[in-house]
Image 1 (spheres, rainbow, N blue to C red):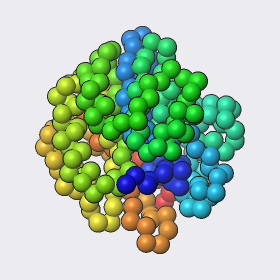
Image 2 (image 1 turned 60 degrees about the vertical axis):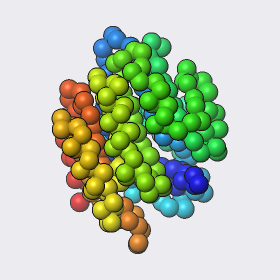
Image 3 (image 1 turned 180 degrees about the vertical axis):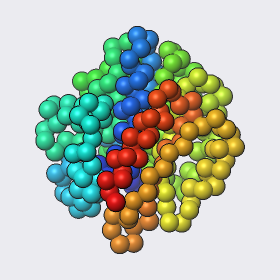
Image 4 (image 1 turned 45 degrees about the vertical axis):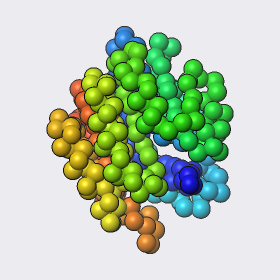
Length: 259
Protein backbone atom coordinates (compact mmCIF):
# COMPACT_ATOMS: atom_id res chain seq x y z
CA UNK A 1 0.00 0.00 0.00
CA UNK A 2 1.58 3.27 -1.14
CA UNK A 3 0.61 6.11 1.20
CA UNK A 4 3.66 8.40 1.44
CA UNK A 5 3.21 11.92 0.07
CA UNK A 6 6.23 14.18 0.23
CA UNK A 7 4.18 17.40 0.40
CA UNK A 8 4.13 17.01 4.19
CA UNK A 9 7.94 17.07 4.27
CA UNK A 10 8.91 19.18 1.23
CA UNK A 11 11.65 21.67 1.92
CA UNK A 12 12.83 19.99 5.12
CA UNK A 13 16.48 19.69 6.08
CA UNK A 14 16.82 16.33 4.34
CA UNK A 15 15.61 17.96 1.12
CA UNK A 16 18.14 20.76 1.48
CA UNK A 17 21.02 18.28 1.74
CA UNK A 18 19.77 16.10 -1.10
CA UNK A 19 18.84 18.92 -3.46
CA UNK A 20 22.03 20.91 -2.88
CA UNK A 21 24.10 17.89 -3.82
CA UNK A 22 21.90 16.97 -6.77
CA UNK A 23 21.95 20.51 -8.13
CA UNK A 24 25.75 20.60 -7.87
CA UNK A 25 26.25 17.28 -9.71
CA UNK A 26 23.82 18.23 -12.47
CA UNK A 27 25.45 21.64 -12.84
CA UNK A 28 28.86 19.98 -13.14
CA UNK A 29 27.65 17.46 -15.72
CA UNK A 30 25.96 20.08 -17.91
CA UNK A 31 29.07 22.26 -18.08
CA UNK A 32 30.55 19.82 -20.58
CA UNK A 33 29.25 19.80 -24.13
CA UNK A 34 28.27 16.16 -23.96
CA UNK A 35 24.72 14.79 -23.63
CA UNK A 36 23.67 12.87 -20.54
CA UNK A 37 20.92 10.63 -19.19
CA UNK A 38 19.03 11.34 -15.96
CA UNK A 39 17.02 8.55 -14.34
CA UNK A 40 14.93 8.84 -11.19
CA UNK A 41 13.35 5.83 -9.51
CA UNK A 42 10.98 7.53 -7.02
CA UNK A 43 10.11 10.88 -8.54
CA UNK A 44 7.24 12.15 -6.39
CA UNK A 45 5.13 14.98 -7.77
CA UNK A 46 8.01 17.25 -8.79
CA UNK A 47 6.51 20.53 -7.58
CA UNK A 48 5.26 21.43 -4.10
CA UNK A 49 3.28 24.29 -2.60
CA UNK A 50 4.84 25.23 0.73
CA UNK A 51 1.75 27.30 1.49
CA UNK A 52 -0.56 24.28 1.27
CA UNK A 53 -2.38 22.91 4.30
CA UNK A 54 -0.30 19.73 4.13
CA UNK A 55 3.05 21.56 4.19
CA UNK A 56 1.95 23.98 6.90
CA UNK A 57 0.63 21.13 9.05
CA UNK A 58 4.14 19.81 9.72
CA UNK A 59 6.04 23.09 9.38
CA UNK A 60 9.13 21.22 8.18
CA UNK A 61 9.96 23.75 5.47
CA UNK A 62 10.06 26.51 8.08
CA UNK A 63 12.87 24.71 9.91
CA UNK A 64 14.49 23.63 6.64
CA UNK A 65 14.77 25.64 3.44
CA UNK A 66 13.36 28.83 5.00
CA UNK A 67 16.03 28.71 7.67
CA UNK A 68 19.04 27.88 5.50
CA UNK A 69 18.36 29.52 2.14
CA UNK A 70 19.45 33.01 3.30
CA UNK A 71 22.90 31.54 3.97
CA UNK A 72 23.30 29.96 0.52
CA UNK A 73 25.72 31.73 -1.80
CA UNK A 74 23.81 33.55 -4.50
CA UNK A 75 25.37 31.64 -7.40
CA UNK A 76 24.82 28.15 -5.95
CA UNK A 77 22.91 26.09 -8.57
CA UNK A 78 20.35 25.04 -5.94
CA UNK A 79 19.55 28.66 -5.10
CA UNK A 80 19.28 29.44 -8.82
CA UNK A 81 16.77 26.61 -9.32
CA UNK A 82 14.73 27.85 -6.35
CA UNK A 83 14.55 31.32 -7.88
CA UNK A 84 13.55 29.94 -11.28
CA UNK A 85 10.75 27.85 -9.77
CA UNK A 86 9.30 30.76 -7.81
CA UNK A 87 9.42 33.02 -10.85
CA UNK A 88 7.61 30.40 -12.88
CA UNK A 89 5.14 28.91 -10.38
CA UNK A 90 4.75 31.44 -7.55
CA UNK A 91 6.39 32.53 -4.31
CA UNK A 92 5.38 29.40 -2.33
CA UNK A 93 6.53 26.93 -5.00
CA UNK A 94 9.27 24.45 -4.12
CA UNK A 95 10.96 22.08 -6.60
CA UNK A 96 11.34 18.37 -6.09
CA UNK A 97 14.32 16.65 -7.66
CA UNK A 98 12.60 16.01 -11.04
CA UNK A 99 12.00 19.74 -11.52
CA UNK A 100 15.52 20.64 -10.40
CA UNK A 101 16.78 18.23 -13.05
CA UNK A 102 14.35 19.44 -15.74
CA UNK A 103 15.44 23.06 -15.24
CA UNK A 104 19.12 22.11 -15.48
CA UNK A 105 19.14 19.61 -18.34
CA UNK A 106 19.54 20.63 -21.96
CA UNK A 107 17.75 19.66 -25.17
CA UNK A 108 20.41 17.05 -25.89
CA UNK A 109 19.87 15.31 -22.53
CA UNK A 110 17.21 12.74 -21.60
CA UNK A 111 15.16 12.51 -18.39
CA UNK A 112 13.34 9.36 -17.25
CA UNK A 113 11.01 9.54 -14.23
CA UNK A 114 9.22 6.69 -12.46
CA UNK A 115 6.52 7.03 -9.80
CA UNK A 116 4.10 4.35 -8.59
CA UNK A 117 1.74 6.38 -6.37
CA UNK A 118 -1.28 7.17 -8.64
CA UNK A 119 -1.98 10.68 -7.33
CA UNK A 120 1.70 11.61 -7.18
CA UNK A 121 2.20 10.29 -10.71
CA UNK A 122 -0.61 12.41 -12.15
CA UNK A 123 0.66 15.47 -10.27
CA UNK A 124 4.15 14.80 -11.64
CA UNK A 125 2.91 14.68 -15.21
CA UNK A 126 1.03 17.93 -14.68
CA UNK A 127 3.99 19.69 -13.04
CA UNK A 128 6.46 18.78 -15.78
CA UNK A 129 4.20 18.68 -18.83
CA UNK A 130 6.15 21.53 -20.46
CA UNK A 131 9.43 19.63 -20.28
CA UNK A 132 10.72 16.83 -22.57
CA UNK A 133 10.45 14.07 -19.96
CA UNK A 134 9.68 10.34 -20.20
CA UNK A 135 7.14 9.36 -17.49
CA UNK A 136 6.36 5.85 -16.31
CA UNK A 137 3.96 4.67 -13.59
CA UNK A 138 6.17 1.69 -12.91
CA UNK A 139 8.48 0.27 -10.27
CA UNK A 140 11.47 2.58 -10.46
CA UNK A 141 14.12 -0.09 -9.99
CA UNK A 142 12.66 -2.28 -12.71
CA UNK A 143 12.49 0.73 -15.00
CA UNK A 144 16.11 1.65 -14.24
CA UNK A 145 17.25 -1.90 -14.97
CA UNK A 146 15.40 -1.85 -18.29
CA UNK A 147 16.98 1.48 -19.25
CA UNK A 148 20.55 0.76 -18.28
CA UNK A 149 22.98 1.17 -19.80
CA UNK A 150 21.19 4.22 -21.19
CA UNK A 151 22.03 6.20 -24.27
CA UNK A 152 23.84 8.43 -23.78
CA UNK A 153 25.85 6.39 -21.27
CA UNK A 154 27.09 9.47 -19.43
CA UNK A 155 24.70 10.41 -16.67
CA UNK A 156 23.11 10.16 -13.27
CA UNK A 157 20.58 8.03 -11.42
CA UNK A 158 18.84 9.33 -8.28
CA UNK A 159 17.13 6.88 -5.94
CA UNK A 160 15.02 8.60 -3.29
CA UNK A 161 12.62 6.05 -1.79
CA UNK A 162 10.13 6.77 0.98
CA UNK A 163 11.25 3.60 2.81
CA UNK A 164 7.61 2.93 3.65
CA UNK A 165 8.14 -0.71 2.69
CA UNK A 166 10.28 -2.28 5.43
CA UNK A 167 12.02 -4.61 2.99
CA UNK A 168 13.45 -1.59 1.12
CA UNK A 169 16.48 -1.64 3.40
CA UNK A 170 17.18 -5.22 2.31
CA UNK A 171 16.37 -4.98 -1.39
CA UNK A 172 17.88 -1.59 -2.29
CA UNK A 173 21.54 -2.76 -2.13
CA UNK A 174 20.69 -5.61 -4.54
CA UNK A 175 18.98 -3.22 -6.96
CA UNK A 176 21.88 -0.80 -6.74
CA UNK A 177 24.43 -3.53 -7.42
CA UNK A 178 22.47 -4.78 -10.43
CA UNK A 179 22.21 -1.29 -11.91
CA UNK A 180 25.91 -0.62 -11.28
CA UNK A 181 26.86 -3.82 -13.10
CA UNK A 182 24.89 -2.75 -16.15
CA UNK A 183 25.91 0.90 -15.97
CA UNK A 184 29.44 0.95 -14.62
CA UNK A 185 30.09 4.57 -15.65
CA UNK A 186 26.86 5.98 -14.24
CA UNK A 187 26.77 8.23 -11.19
CA UNK A 188 24.38 6.51 -8.76
CA UNK A 189 22.99 8.55 -5.86
CA UNK A 190 20.91 7.08 -3.04
CA UNK A 191 19.20 9.11 -0.32
CA UNK A 192 18.47 7.46 3.03
CA UNK A 193 17.06 8.62 6.38
CA UNK A 194 19.06 8.39 9.60
CA UNK A 195 16.62 7.02 12.15
CA UNK A 196 16.74 6.56 15.89
CA UNK A 197 16.17 2.83 15.26
CA UNK A 198 19.33 2.54 13.15
CA UNK A 199 17.30 0.75 10.46
CA UNK A 200 19.63 2.06 7.75
CA UNK A 201 22.84 0.62 9.19
CA UNK A 202 22.72 -2.89 7.74
CA UNK A 203 21.76 -1.51 4.32
CA UNK A 204 24.78 0.79 4.39
CA UNK A 205 27.11 -2.02 5.38
CA UNK A 206 26.00 -3.99 2.32
CA UNK A 207 26.30 -0.95 0.05
CA UNK A 208 29.82 -0.22 1.30
CA UNK A 209 30.86 -3.84 0.72
CA UNK A 210 29.40 -3.79 -2.81
CA UNK A 211 30.82 -0.38 -3.77
CA UNK A 212 34.16 0.19 -2.00
CA UNK A 213 34.94 3.35 -4.00
CA UNK A 214 31.78 5.15 -2.91
CA UNK A 215 31.36 8.58 -1.34
CA UNK A 216 29.03 8.94 1.63
CA UNK A 217 27.71 12.11 3.24
CA UNK A 218 25.51 12.52 6.29
CA UNK A 219 24.00 15.46 8.15
CA UNK A 220 22.44 15.38 11.59
CA UNK A 221 19.66 17.55 12.94
CA UNK A 222 17.14 17.53 15.79
CA UNK A 223 13.77 15.78 15.31
CA UNK A 224 11.27 18.20 13.79
CA UNK A 225 8.76 17.37 16.52
CA UNK A 226 8.49 15.24 19.62
CA UNK A 227 8.55 11.55 18.81
CA UNK A 228 9.82 12.02 15.25
CA UNK A 229 12.30 9.26 14.44
CA UNK A 230 14.43 10.95 11.76
CA UNK A 231 17.52 12.64 13.18
CA UNK A 232 19.51 13.09 10.00
CA UNK A 233 19.85 12.13 6.36
CA UNK A 234 22.48 10.67 4.10
CA UNK A 235 23.59 10.38 0.51
CA UNK A 236 25.47 7.35 -0.82
CA UNK A 237 27.18 8.00 -4.16
CA UNK A 238 28.76 5.56 -6.59
CA UNK A 239 31.17 7.08 -9.14
CA UNK A 240 31.09 10.58 -7.59
CA UNK A 241 32.24 13.21 -10.09
CA UNK A 242 35.05 15.68 -9.57
CA UNK A 243 34.16 18.43 -7.11
CA UNK A 244 31.69 16.40 -5.07
CA UNK A 245 33.82 16.55 -1.94
CA UNK A 246 33.98 20.34 -2.17
CA UNK A 247 30.19 20.45 -2.59
CA UNK A 248 29.82 18.30 0.52
CA UNK A 249 32.08 20.63 2.49
CA UNK A 250 29.84 23.53 1.50
CA UNK A 251 26.76 21.65 2.71
CA UNK A 252 28.48 20.91 6.01
CA UNK A 253 29.34 24.57 6.44
CA UNK A 254 25.71 25.53 5.77
CA UNK A 255 24.35 23.02 8.27
CA UNK A 256 26.65 24.41 10.93
CA UNK A 257 24.37 27.46 10.87
CA UNK A 258 21.83 25.30 12.71
CA UNK A 259 24.01 25.07 15.82
